[in-house]
Length: 113
Image (cartoon, rainbow, N blue to C red; front, side, top):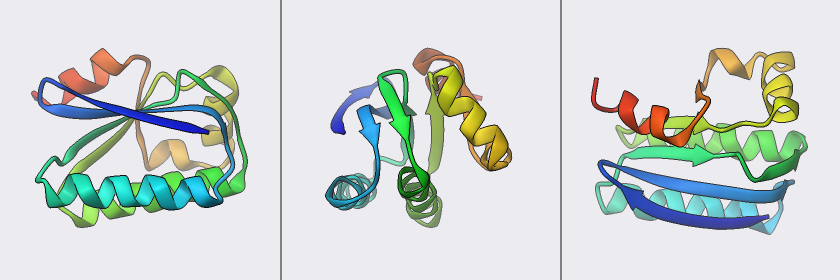
């Protein structure tokens, strides 16, 4: 898994690409989210459009990230999930927890409301 991030308008977009399977990358992801909260950057969009596979550890990583941002007073939204990833969110009922948008732009615009 590769992690890239950039600031767009009033949000930070974190792009996760490749296979999301937890492990050491989960700690890197967590450290990034804590850094953003410390910098008072609390609107976070996770771009999953480049994610090819996600296992239960990957889902756990997203849940942990969601909790970290929420506890820090922020918003954590998913965007661009592939059909495979979206069906995983539906099966696990996590689709009811995460705000999920078809594009990063939609997710960013939702912060303005």
